[in-house]
Amino acid sequence: MTSDALLYVILAVALLLVAVVVSVALVRGRVEPPTDTTPADTTVAEPDLRPEPVVTEPGLEVPETAQGRLVRLRARLARSQSTLGRGLLVVLSRDHLDEETWEEVEETLLAADVGIGPTTELVDKLRARLRTEGAKNPAAARSALREELVALVDPTMDRTLAVDRVGDTPGVVLVVGVNGTGKTTTVGRIARVLVAEDKTVLLAAADTFRAAAADQLQTWGERVGVDTVRGPEGGDPASVGFEAVKRGTEEGVDTVLVDTAGRLHTKTGLMDELGKVKRVIEKQAPVTEVLLVIDATTGQNGLTQARVFAEVTAVTGIVLTKLDGTAKGGIVIAVQRELGVPVKLVGLGEGADDLAPFEVDTFVDALLGQ
Image 1 (cartoon, one colour):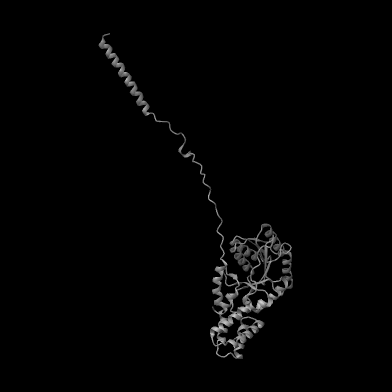
Image 2 (cartoon, rainbow, N blue to C red; image 1 turned 135 degrees about the vertical axis):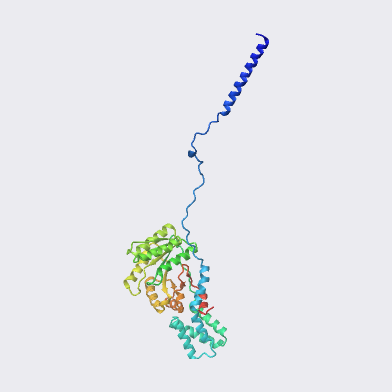
């Protein structure tokens, strides 16, 4: 083979090899890389390590503070009671205070349910004082009347509520009164007062004669996160009080509030049963407070009720409800003088927090329209 022919052969082989290499490269370029065979809809997500949101119960009501209640109740008290004070001031500011004038003062006080004894005492002191100091100056007459009324309402009485624990047992408050005075509502309101003071409270629905009373009390408690101990309808009220105080002791509760059935003060059997409730409770813990609820609008009839209840349960304090519904504010003086125990709380309205501690100065200033 000639040299030229050999050269052609070599070139032909080289071209063939180049063609093979190019073909292989093209084939490899068309081959797609392997893909994920996992179906798109079955992709496994990363686990969510965030904590699940906490589902909270509906917010409880926050009772109004004592200071807030007092500010509002002072205004209401002044509106409802100032008639008595204005009437007295008009009479006492006259140029000449004769016997007829003083009789008018007495009638005004008696009409306001101050009572015969306190009225006589107040008139005698005012007569002696104004005889000496003179009464032509209205400001002086007002000052004298205010000071004598404050003394009559008696600021020295202890009006604190005995609701604190005694050793290992809770304070026990027994709430009593006749039908229709607002007893159950008062218990619910006292619970709010104590919750606002950061005390732990347990309610006892010892009015087992009316299922509605237990339901009502339980609703009051639920609004501020307070539990209620109940018994079967028509069951023994004393056992409900006993169980409530027992539970309160076990749980370290500050105060147990016991709502009792409303009863007529003329019904001996019912009053005896009330005494039993107190005796049974005291097998667990001493009753630290017995509050008698009186409707201020009942006037002198409230004194009769107070007298009988005091004989049965040794009342330690009085709650006057509906004081805004009467101009006869003298019931405060009369009932204190009758029982020798202080008015500790007053109710002045239909709101949940319309109950406040009784303040002598505030009450007298309301009487005088200040």
